[in-house]
Length: 250
Image 1 (tube, rainbow, N blue to C red):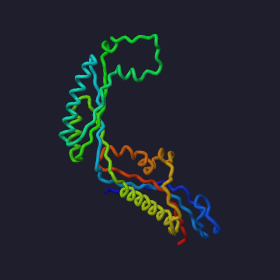
Image 2 (image 1 turned 30 degrees about the vertical axis):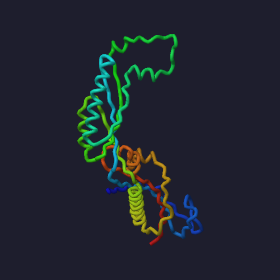
Image 3 (image 1 turned 60 degrees about the horizontal axis):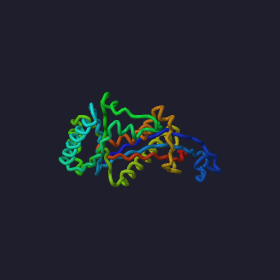
Image 4 (image 1 turned 135 degrees about the vertical axis):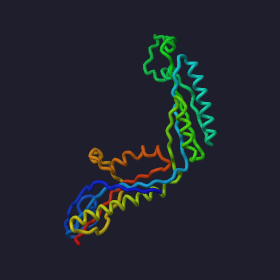
């Protein structure tokens, strides 16, 4: 399991009076001279995938629609062979020609209009289909994707999954809190203080889009978390937490 952690922007430094805390941690009393420090942090960890899906898109072009059918049958035959050789299962969708797609996409229909059946023949025809391959042996995916890349008109994208994300999410959360603690220690040291205790930990943290535009790496990593899944046999977990620390005089 690989782990990483990133720290976000310090949101608040507020000195509270001796009587009671101010702001979101109203239930935590602060002693005289204590300070509330709010931090956002993101922790990441990865676990090895135990299943995968390869989404396949098929794009076809021909002078006539019957050309599309011949191409479709030929490509599907190669896809089935590739999936079988990789020890996987495949589901193949039906061929949709440009005329089929046009019929499904019509919004306003003029009942007095007629369709010129020669239009597609004059300009050529296109078609599309999709398939899903589920390999049983993940060690064969690399060879399978190379085979798919060699089939003209075929484009594929792999998605990896892990059946149990409990442990990796826990590790990501631990990494986020550890990163926040280290940052809090840094803040405290720069002000001649110490970290007295943690007042609150929450995962209900909103994305700071201003920080994203300014290049805050922890926010950017969160925004790109979904994209990170597709290119590796390790499945990532990203947990973003808000941690409120109480700083005290040394």
